[in-house]
Structure formats: C-alpha cells, structure tokens
Length: 396
Image 1 (cartoon, helix red, strand yellow):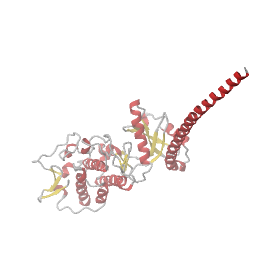
Image 2 (cartoon, one colour):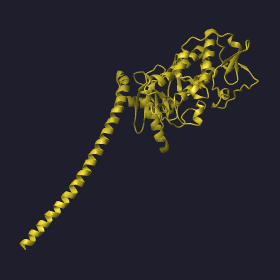
Image 3 (cartoon, rainbow, N blue to C red):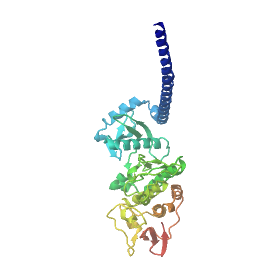
Image 4 (cartoon, rainbow, N blue to C red):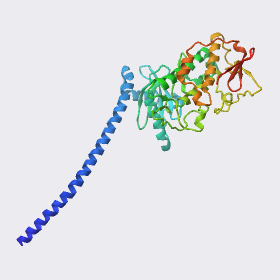
C-alpha cells in the first residue's frame, strides 16, 4: 500500500510537470501577444489623441482670448442657435447646415453642423467633417475662411468659423441690388482673391491641397467684398506617390472634363473650376453653353445662346448687363482676365496654366487695348477679335 501510494503520488507529480511544461509556454505566448496588441492599441490611441489635441491646441487659442473653454463654448453655441433651429440657418451644404451664432460677448460666428444622416451616409459625412478640420487647421490665408474650433459629439458635431457677412458669391450675383454693388473693380478683386487662395493651397502648402469644389457657392464675400474660399469637406491633400484617385465631388457645371474618363485628381481640376467661376463672375450667372464649344468641356444647360460659326457677339453683350460696360484700366483688366479664364478652360489639362501663373498674371498691369472695349468681339470657342481691325487674339 505504501508503494502504491508512493507510485500514485509520483505519477501525479509527473503529470503535473507535463501540464506545467505545456500550459505555461502557451499561456506565456498568449500573454505576450495580448501585451503587444494592447500596447499597439494604446500607442495608436495616444497618437490619435495627440493629433487632435494638437489641432485643438491650435484652434483653442482663439477662444482662450475670449475667455472660453470647450464646455462653455458648446453651451453658448447651442443657446445662440436655439439648438440649431431653422430660424438661424443661413445655408446648407452637402454634409452640413450653416447657422449664425451671436456669442454672449457679442462676437458673431458661423457654425456648420454635421447632418444627422442615414447609416449609409454617416461615414461619408464624418470623412468630410475630418477633411475640413485637417485642411483648415493648417491654413492661414486672408482669402480662405478661418476655422476657429470644432466639436465632435454623438448628438451635435460642428465646426466654428469666422462669420463672413455678405454670404456666398452666388447669393450676391443672384440679387440685383447686391450684384450692382459688386462693380467691375470689386469683381476683378474677387477673382484675384480666389486665385491667390488656390495658388497658396497648390504651391505654398505642403502637401498641396486640392479643393475639388471651387464654385460660387463656396466663395464667401465680406463687407468689403473680399473673397474667402470656404467648404473644404471634399478637399484632398495631394499625395507624393500620385495615388490620388477620387470619386466625383465637384458641383455640376464646374467639373473638369477629364474627370469624365479618369478619376485622378490634381491641381488642374481646380484650375478648370476657377475658369468657370471667373466667367460666372463677369457674366453674373453660370456661363453654361458659352463654354460648351470648348473641346472636351462640360457645361450646365442654360438659356444662354451659343454663337455659331457665322455668328459673332460683342464681349460687352456677354458680360453682366446689370452693370455699365467697364472703361479705361478696368476694361483692359476685364479683357486680360477673360483670356486667362479661357486658358484655364482648356480641354487639355496639361495646357492649362497653374494657379501660381494665373495669380501672377492677375497682379501684373494689363496691356493697352488696341481698340475700344465696346467693339471687342467674342467669337466661337474662345477667340476674341476687334471689330474695327481684323486682329484675332487666341485665348485658349
């Protein structure tokens, strides 16, 4: 019996050793994997937190000057917009509505609230929300709307911008009184402002930023009719590995024609949209069919008549009829800027100027006109000539 007991005890010890030798290494491996995975997740979370803390630190300085912290600002915006009542809504975009908010200190801001969407749309809206934060948090330019702060909350996610008093360029052009106040000098200045903003984004920011939705809806005017490019929800940082494939994001009527057969986005897409926008500023409405004759161009259907091969129309009859025709230096600038606009509308993206070239050209003094502005003819497909002299000027 003692031997049996001893034998049993010894056998138990042997099986225990086997269990220890097999289970412990397996447990140790699982523990090691768990530690590695946990460390990775913690590190990733810290990096994400640092990234957003960095953005919040940059954006928070503005509100700190006003004596705000995040909680107070959130509560004040909810109160100022009456919990985002439609009465305070001043516009709506693809992924958010914009509200005017007067803070208790008297400062006025614009607040873009993320739409509460169906599940299928939530990820797209969040992506646009993040795009705008990342793009605008790194931009400081007088012709680009300023982002003051943002709030990411399950119920209310919003961005806080400077308030630009006149609203969108499209709204101004569609209102007769406002459009007449926006005279030729102011319109030329708006064109310059947008060109300077896009030149900065394309050439002075690293990596370059492509707006992808340059339109009259996304250009805001302040009390001095200075242009502020806005709405960076579809903006794209241009990657150096050229893997910049995209889905259509631009407003219809401003889309570069090459996007009909390729989804590769670059600066030239913004250049084309700028050309359309410039013509819209001069005409007072979208140019529509007047650019449809350009090779591979896209256009929106309008009632504007298109000159055919046997038809010639005066440039003064194409531009906004609510204003008197431009004179002297302003007339020269309108002609030279129109030529630049058509260069931007070239159907071959490689032949379009860069926005830096456009901005530089706009800041140079225009050459004298050989004939009065009133007899300059707008010919088919972007060729202008002078009625009194048979001088043709190619502008595409």
